[in-house]
Length: 243
Image (tube, rainbow, N blue to C red; front, side, top):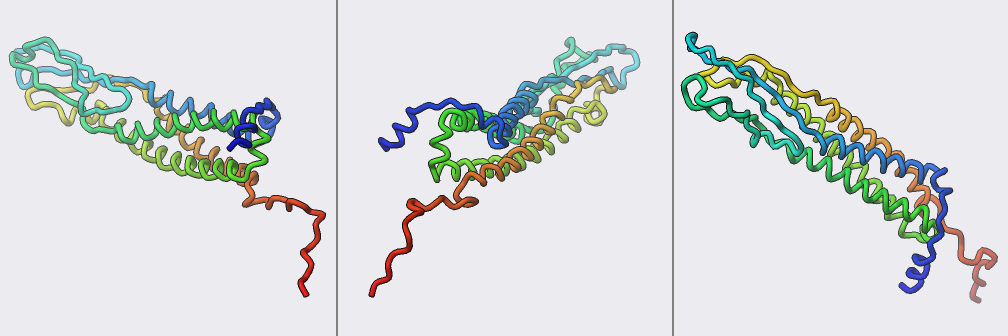
């Protein structure tokens, strides 16, 4: 323990690992993890409907109702705004969006945040304690295992989020909403927010999968699984045979 403490205290800042795939890819993973949780976790949008009275031709009341939603996309808690009351000479019937997609969205963002934090720790180790990383058998192996775990997590979370985003688009589409219009009203399609940033978040998720899976090979080359450590005393010959 004292020997490890002494090595950890010997900070030797060296940026040369950034020129190697091991460090350069880690920087890319750090950047893309930021984009991943920012494009998903920072999203907010809305969908709208035009509502008129039906079947009441003598009443010409017409209003645009809007439902605003955002991360983590618990759409079943999102209500359309209440129009002026009374609407169509009767109390307004509450109208919610449907579905709860928070599990896939939060899982995806959580993986991105932990990947971001791990990249920071790995870069500190690569750049400041490269000598400790190279002299240790356990650190490269731990790095390799964690890299494989993150590659799997990116695959699972990105796939789940891609499916969740597809469902969100369907549920919030005005074309879908008019089929759920309350019977006392007549609904026509309104506008909906663009979801380009959410599409980008899915793309970044699978890009992170490629980066982490590819980086696993370069981390593997640092372990003693790929290169056996040299003998402690190479000049020492084989032990003498006993008579």
